[in-house]
Amino acid sequence: MILGRRETEVLTAVVETYVETAQPVASQALAAGLGLSPASLRSTMAALTEKGYLQQPHTSAGRIPTVQAFRYYLDQVLKLGPLSRRDQSRLHEHILPGEGELSQVLRRAARALSSLTRQVCVIMAPRQDLARWRQIDFVLLRPGMIMAVLVMQGGLISNRLVQMDTRLTADDLVRCGNYLNSLFEGRTTLEVRGEIERQLRSVSQTLDAYRRAWELASQALASDEQPEVFVGGTSHLTAQPEFTELETIQELLRLIEERSRLLELLDKTSASEPVSVSLTQDMPGLAGCSLVISPYSAFASTHGTLAVLGPVRMNYARIVPMVDFAAQILSQCLKSRY
Picture 1 (cartoon, helix red, strand yellow):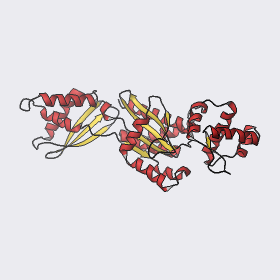
Picture 2: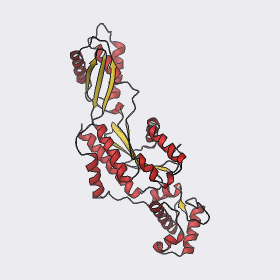
Picture 3: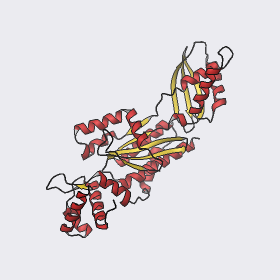
Picture 4: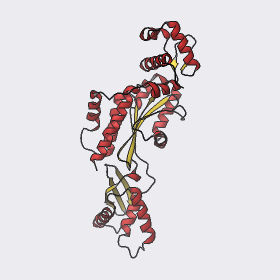
């Protein structure tokens, strides 16, 4: 439903005032800024209430915007500008202060974005299946116990303990690593896993001098590994007036702690466009919340997800460009590691 000009102006004023104050908005507070009489304002606000865009928590109180109002505001009203140079500099400074593993970069990004937005930041690392193989090394910890260290293009690193027979020496492991790297550099983990399964099915143990290499790689690439998730700014939840009830905050904290639920949430809400806003009122445990979410990637085959989680009453004019810019920084970081 497209609202009339006056209704849109009043709704915009209510939304932006509520974002700033977190308090019900009375008609008297808007009269001077809009140049309308209190009677005209009350009439328009009553019409918006009837249409489901505003609600009145108490008879004598002002009105607050509904989720429907925020959706209209996001789709029909909000005009996004570029992120300020100051915020751009702060994100660059905090996310990319130097070299480090990709996990360190993502952890810094989650802390930086949560600090600047005063909301919770959730970052999902790129999925390993679509990442491209750079190098695998095997380290002998003790007889029969080996550490497999797989480095993917883009800086994603996977460490896994592998158990093998005690006859493998450190030199054997170097040869196995060199053999696998010569075959698989530049191929996706999904492709490599399929090739390993075919080789193990078809090659006789007595005839294949490199069967141990295939077996090592098979254990190193076990498919049950979920992407890492980095969370920053959980403490900001308690500063939001929407989350003052103990039951609400406990449910949100449980969601954040359960990484599988977070991954499911990010998968459901991720989209192909640079930045999307999901008003998550229909998701268990997230009533009254919103996700500003963006993918980041080096190429189409390697991507992760970045999101800011907070109340529906967020300053989208600032947070949406900030999420977009942070995703651009992470994409550049991945590309620089290829």
